[in-house]
Length: 442
Ligand SMILES: Cc1ncc(COP(=O)(O)O)c(C=O)c1O
Image (cartoon, rainbow, N blue to C red; front, top):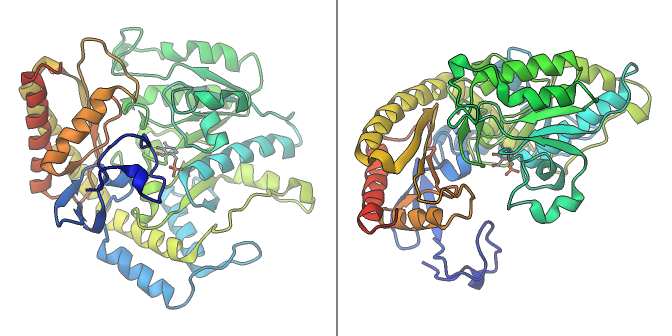
């Protein structure tokens, strides 16, 4: 292990730069495993930031890449189209049952969110019956990316507070949270009290959009909430002609057991954004899906109605081919695999709760996500809560790669993870946390 990240020429992200945090040098990867320079094999228990949904280097994805590179690597998508992009767009639209009409490509989740925000603003600009709108309604626990626009529609927190001067107008509301409802309601008895302020606000002024991660706020705590919230948001958005934007960068591509979370919730957003698992983590690719009623407002000979947005690598042919193979895998086996994984995670969660007792809170599973909070005398939900790093470092003794979000610990393995790796992950968690209890780190 390289003992100090500062000695690398690469600025390793989300890493405190003057800490002597050990850096793993990875030399190869296969399925749920990565191997370091010393030959140690590690389990990538969060699928490299939720991307490798079929594990590393899936043969079908490799084969798609090899086939594509024989003919076309990349061509700019302005003024050109190619088969790889077209095939993928058709496959994506089919996944949505043609709820959407067009696929706008970019190369990461943040950019795909920026595109959705700009499309929303220009939709009102282009639409003959609407006045311009540019303000967004957002939620405290949300994370939509690190570029300025995506950061601005994320909840204000330690990541982005330094840049709050750059914020374009948004109105932030406390995020729905059905694990710890501030109103003490169970989803069955709830009347979406958490949306009362938003309801008052949205009826008083015109907003361009509501931006939300459907059913799970991922990076800000793996907070689960009920689909009732989305039903209510849909109703309010429709009533006020506000666009509803779902960020499925994390939840898309089967993570919750359906192709998309919006299908699980049965609530259709006006703009849909996804990325991460789109290429099974092999290449950078993201998509913003646009329905006909929005697209139609951009169809005009007037150049001022056109959408002037492109990234150099938009619709890269290699990425699109791998994306197509990834969607084929999702349809053929991915959804079945993630549903099986969910059943297994539920079994592990029950036994984990029994063994850990009151030291763990909110032990929960949805699709391919298992998460819980480590109970502390002073509950501090910030990402920088040092307990997260302590747990992460202790798990290294078991060669398990996890990245707790402060005191929230979560596991999101590939859908294809083996039973023995699941066993190894849960055994390591239980041993590590029991060790913490014995040493008084509670
Ligand atoms: C819900 C959500 N939206 C957007 C992003 C940003 O995606 P990217 O890191 O590809 O820019 C993330 C990244 O974790 C995310 O989880």
